[in-house]
Image (tube, rainbow over all chains, first blue to last red; front, top):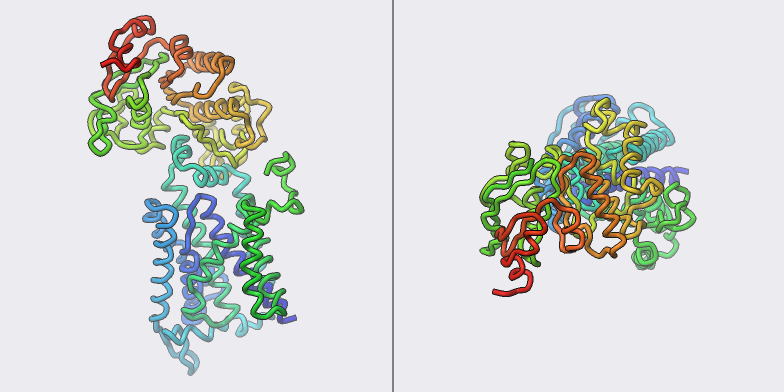
Length: 298
Length: 246
């Protein structure tokens, strides 16, 4: 049981991380900074519950706002660069964040024990859930309530004008500008929103694993974050969810019996999927339930 | 309406537009013609703010817009279509128009409703624009699935959705057969009926000569002639520019 709850948790964090990258991809920004925002959310909310003794909801909220503030700042220089250059710049940002936490030492005495981030030793004792008697199933439910809320918010965004404007910017910046769209506002808002989602994900991650260190926030995780929406497709939010379930649930957990061959198959399957469904898993016919696809388009 | 004074633009030493001055009055349809590479598209891009002018000024209704970013020029009443169709192909037809809908086309909405609403007022306005553009029956289709002629019409619909005073059409007849050109001509005249002013950049003389009030001719970034279509057809300079005579 624990094992399956663990997978559900992992799928939950990765879905949030993927959705934060999804929001940016809608506007055409391929960002590797999501893991940086994830780390900021994790450390900030961890520090708030451990050192300041805040309630988890408040700590997650403040952590997410902190992450979105940094995302807002990253959003401005990101306006001027595109494609590969943006990828490199955002990798640099994530690495700066990681190295900052690698060096962050902030220990205090609490109840006779030293707590807080301890540089390369990592940040242990993020025990809010255990200290307040949360059962594992309650933690998983809490994570999934957040995931569902974020999915609902992004789904709704596609039903209002903002959704069309985000996608318009992603498709053709010049045409969007010429239609009166302010690119600065749209792209910086998307970055800020993506930072917020990644920040919440980070806070949830830190509290449910009780331990984070700089190794939890490497570029590999940022690669996963952008791989999910790309593999899943940008047609709607469920593409990202499918991709996370596909990769984390089926490829990584389901194929454990294959041992080392798993990694080989993993890459191969992604290549196959991208070849047959270049616009993502969401376009596989069995998923054709949305109104748009009934019209017979690709 | 549109007043262009002594504008210039260099691209790495090449004078794409050189000391160009002309004006477009309210309600006029003005043609901007010239051989390939004469600076027509550059002029359109300068008016829209795709890149800034090096020299001179562009004003709309006596307001200098030469320093404004593109989206603010749209707000001040300029909209355009593109030489190579640039629709949002993954969006539906009505969403393409929705993106361009500006606030003053449905003033009763607050900004929250404008951006986060999905209101009847907006939908009705979009429907109206699409019916006017002859796309009333393609409301829900993906823009990428439209035929070439329909895509051109949708670009025009998107251009009028921002409630412009001046519409810039960049070679709208490119690739069209003569029936489609006739339809386009009628649509341009319809724009004038709406009270819009039109600047038409075009190669297809069949269209230009039959629709415009006045023509401005460019060659090597300079204005070489200006006048009504009959005079332009007789103009020796213009004939030389087109036939390549020196």
